[in-house]
Image (cartoon, rainbow, N blue to C red):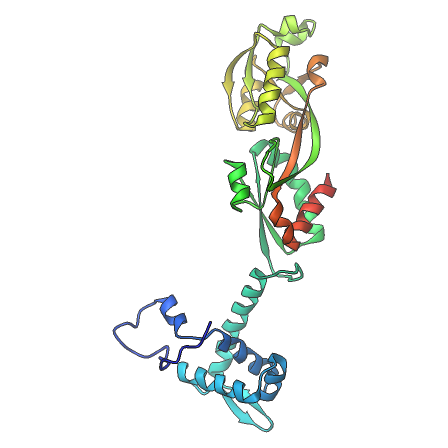
Length: 317
């Protein structure tokens, strides 16, 4: 930001415009001056600060004079071969140093800064409950300073292409060339019912199972459409009388009714610990599977932090 040549206005100067207007206030300050202030404060002298910033001592002195015109304080007092900060300068340093550290963290281009950064990962509830514990443990081992934020998936291609979400994990396949994809795992499918379901007392054949209502727990996506077609071939006359995006609602409903539901085996293994559910062995269905993939914008690979997170997640599975 260039320093304008208009007379500097003190920050505490009274007037009709003395209101909290942060942009107008910052416009009257060359933010480069704050860097020079920090250098003089930390290195306790104009000459030392000039060496660090590759500037002349005269340029440093002029910058300090400009700051004195803005702030109601001399900021630094000559002492021996150096300078000593005033109490007001020490007060400023506490805030300016924190602000510069935050800016450095936001502009971290090397991935080496150790301040906290948020990585946003989009999942559906059913996928998130399976993958996020694994991802959290893996990422924390490699980058404990990162904050992981799990958000819902609404329009995955838009979320990724417009950088609304860093990563998305689900069963979709995208055709956009700008998006990258890595399969994390393939999960077999199983037919689920409640414990003591009447079908369990008869031979578990397709013919005997066709008379029961089904509930649908499949998410949207091209790959899911293909899978639905295969399920319709296996259960050509199945009646889907309930559907839900919420795995807990689905498990609760199945456990208290005679409905059947097709779900991923890993999800069943988790839900059967909370509800009285059983898996029905059905060879025609158990050979089917759904792939769960990690999706990202390929431009994100230019970010070393995000590239590291992607590699850590891939290795975790």
